Amino acid sequence: MIGIDLGTTFSAAAYLDPDGNPQLVSNSRGARLTPSVVMEEDDGTVVVGEDARESMVLMGDAVVSTVKDYMGTDRKFVLPSGTAYTPEQVSALILKKIVKDAEEFLGEEIRQAVVTVPAYFNDAQRQATKDAGRMAGLDVACMPNEPTAAALYYAWSSRMEKGRILVYDLGGGTFDASIVEICGKQAEVVATGGIRKLGGHFFDQLILNYAADYLLEKYGLDVYDDEYIDELQELSLKAENCKIQLSSRTSAQMVIKIGKVREKLEITRAQFEKMIAGFYGRTESTVRMVLQDAGMSWKDIDKLLLVGGSSKIPYIAERLREFSGMEPSHETNPDEAVALGAALYASGLFEKVQDVCSHSLGIVSRRGAGAEKYNSVIIPRNTALPARMSRDYYTGTNDMKKICLEITEGEDEDLDYVSILAGIEILLPPGIPRNTRVTVEMFLNQNQLLHVYARIHAEPEIYKEIEIPRSSNLDESEIAEQTTLLERIVVQ
Image (cartoon, rainbow, N blue to C red; front, side):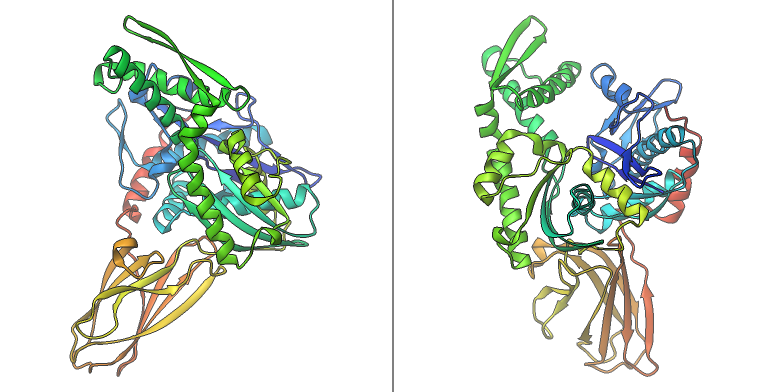
């Protein structure tokens, strides 16, 4: 069983060598990281990785990138063949490439993997990731949170016997913060939090917007117009390269060639830092919330671990140093720590790894007949996993015909600030009196996938597991159909 970091911009796989050391798999190009980019060629062949990434400029309409941002949604990606790919299918193609390279590298067939996910992924996103694994022919044994996996690798590599690690994980498209307590071969997550859409490719967009505004003001040239689609894609890659250069230089230049425009646009590190200051501020607020949820302050933290490619930006470490009073750790490679930690998780080297749920789960309820609806939490955020909790409710009228059970995800009582995962109707037998007790039980497994049960305390008693219709996810027939389609696709 291997560990896989299925990332927004790059993915990686790792395994334990015969000496018990986690190692990254080298892909078919000999690289340790594979771009999470998928391209469909004219003959139907699918290319995943660096070749697809390099073709983004010339064949933009045949390329899909940053698919992780769309997991758990009904977004479709229509490629030149006319095939409309779901985010699960695109992710499955990336997984197929990762597994294919791992099999060639290790000389063994791989059918089982641990696949990490952002700590702040919700139910729909986690289910979509598991479905992607199934489509790729993988048994996804577990889906640990990315910061948890990184903490495992740090604890192993530094020989930490006891201590608390605050993981600051800033990747290509998501941000997570988790406090992980290490005690020998046990790891326990104390609290976690995150932001769904924040990371490196959003920083790239800020640089791209800056260049676009400059060109519009100076030349009246709107690069977001359809006629400049190819030039815009090239400019996007240059914006990303500019961001990378600014990590080691005080300024960088974007060479712009669009029509008759020939321009060298300079962007300084100070300008870039001003652009991303607001994003950083949001991550700091999340870290503060995680510390508060854990009942801790910085003096209770032994290590501040930076993970994710975007954490290499000097401004991030500088601001965190001021915020925490600690020196951020650069002892592990931020691009590789998650995959290596996933391999450790898969190996069972740690006797116990206990994560927590990243979102509260509950139902829509009322505090009395005619009262306003509110979010009634059953499993609070940061509850240790697996979790099984229940809460009693009561019918509001005599002879109710049905119960409308709306499952919620989020912390706020105000329904405007939570997500409704599903709405289910439970039909009741005739004659049930008012104030009949209804127990709603929720079970959240180690992968943070939800199961719901209802017990109606009537005569006779009714107890049933509720099948959750996840509208944002695929049903079994769709998974089977899309799996069959992917089996026919050659991935290179």
